[in-house]
Image (cartoon, rainbow, N blue to C red; front, top):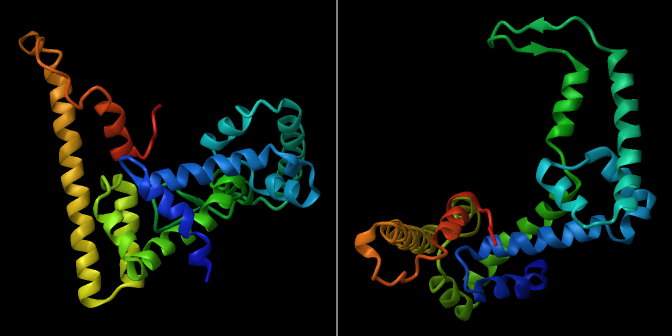
Length: 240
């Protein structure tokens, strides 16, 4: 079973002292995918064919660039640009005058050039490598929830989740759990999310208080990094 293969990284993530263990899993996958992109793989024709076709999203092109493999990045961009130019040239030969749709405001249809660019803007080699494994990680969470009592306790004692991954877990739950088991999981997950969001909100409020002279002599408590933790809770962005 594939879930057994992924049990170790999922357990490791839930063992971390972090605001969202699912973010921790995603970040590990993301770093691995970026390193893979600028590792020996970029010299392989089959891998380059995929990077040529998919390109990179705004976030990941910067992360790939920051790997400091300038030659590798240049080779990847060279063949990607060449394919993109060729595809656009081919698309322009099939372009017709845009038609205004009767059912939408100021939207055009039947333009293969803009459709191609839109599809390219919404694809990413790094994202595609992450997403397949990430889906298995989510499935593994539920596999462990159902089969591993130690993991259930680890889940219950976590610091909750960011809002994005809270939604992922609650959306996925009905696929894996039914009736009372589903209600129990949702109740625990709701409680974890709300209580830990309130905890971070309290830290943020105390952080704000510390800018008031009346609180000069008060301790910072757990508020010094509250802004970073709040951003992770709301936007799934880990600011180090």
